[in-house]
Length: 69
Image 1 (cartoon, rainbow, N blue to C red):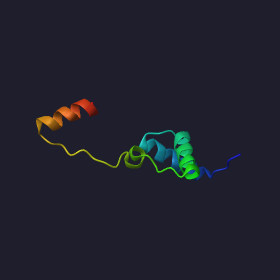
Image 2 (cartoon, one colour):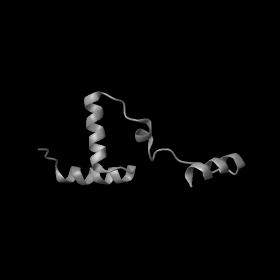
Image 3 (cartoon, rainbow, N blue to C red):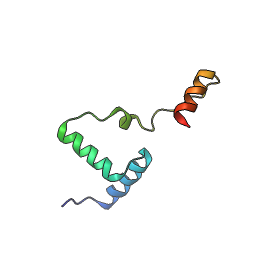
C-alpha cells in the first residue's frame, strides 16, 4: 500500500501534465531510476525546457516543417 498526501498528488499530476506524461509513468520512471541508479533520459530531463528560435532560413524552415508539423 502506498499513501501520498493529496496536495502532493495534485501537484504531481499538474507537473506530469506539463511535461506530457501520465502520473503513473512519471512515478514509475522516478522510482525505477532511483532503484536502478539509471540516469534520467535526456528527452525527459529537457522536455519543455528548450525553446525554438525562429529563423527565416530555408534549411531551418525545412527541418522545422519535417520534425515539428
